[in-house]
Length: 549
Image (cartoon, rainbow, N blue to C red; front, side, top):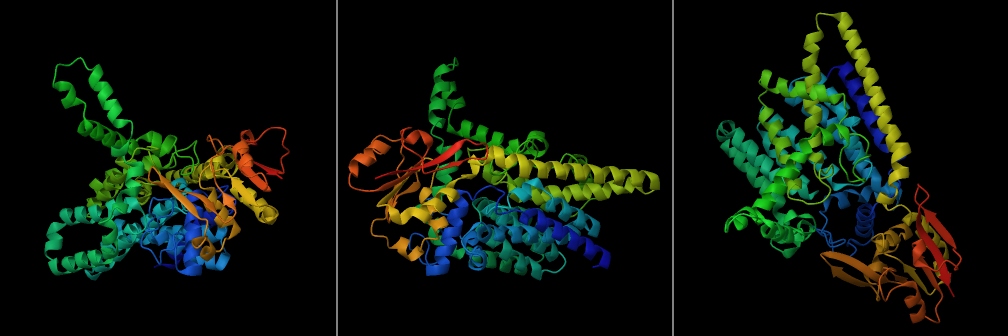
């Protein structure tokens, strides 16, 4: 590698790290319930070798009942060991592998596009990507899977020159399967598709390809017990379009309103036609200008809002890059198109927050690579005019700076104020209060209205995992494939809005106890003084704390 290229790569890597590390303990404004679950289970493994359920070194973490894949949790252990069970301890891991993904994309881009400049540009675009930054400043399994996929594709490309890399590529692809559910579908289908596209090449290397296939299967072997159990469908049931409770009523309603003669209503309105319709709709929603360049994904945790997943300035380069793939007859274009077209299949079978930035993050490197190719291709038209080249670069630098500054303004100043609610803000503040006063009360009643108060309590108290695992009054219950913790230690987690567990009911049932209550403003009578209150960043109330003696 030339010194100049090396220095640019170091610069891009440093910028990428800064964009992911700066103020990461405050922005996003709070750890979400998945982050505290990942963090506490990693802490539990670190301290006891068991997860929160008391299972020794599990391959799947039951967590809230959705069975998290293991790699993100195990990878979080070093960060928690060095920095503690806190925001930095949890988020340092995605910062590191997010930055490494940028670095690896340079090598992939150089290999795949045959240009060091294209490699640098693709790495730079990923480094400043709103899509990628958002999901590597918090602990999301999808971003870790993306790292392994990028590494796997790089090794796969290297295998066309040195066949041993085909075998090595199976390792990161297999690891991606242990990281995120979308990768469980993407990795095997991608490898199978690549084999079909390049079958002539692979048939000539049948021994190596067979060995690669065996290595991949061996690495996935620990998943076998899970795939043969009922647990494998837990997460799928929560998000699948086939488990949408409104699906059958809509089908029956449309059949009833149909004016067509029998049996046409049944042939037209049925599960197959409706699921096919939603699959196609969900799939193509991710290729729209609205998603890519204008407003992005609707899920507030996964996107800053008010801008697309890609910058506007990438649009012309993306178009030119797609043209260049065919014009230049790139021999790896099959890999690139298989990558992007298969990335959106897992999300197409889900029903919530479509289009979805998190479940489709695996596609992000494709857009940076093709945009980089378009940039390099466009330079051909500027060779004959130095003046035109100066004007082009000056305008491009200005546009990039404006775009990045606008994104950072949205991220640091607008986003936290508008969407702190979506990040479950307030739990840390109220648990800190609990920690300072818990010994003064017989029971602490913490409303579960916002979801998972037990896990935030465990996390921010740094509660001893061994003590929690063996808590004699630990009570869990399961509804709709989701697990709730009702009690442990002196903590009680009801929904204070439910009949029978309202404030007055609990006070009546505990006449001789000193109680601390945490809930919403409307959960308690106005005349009772508040010991402590927490507001979202927009000054809307989130928690009130009161006591009953």
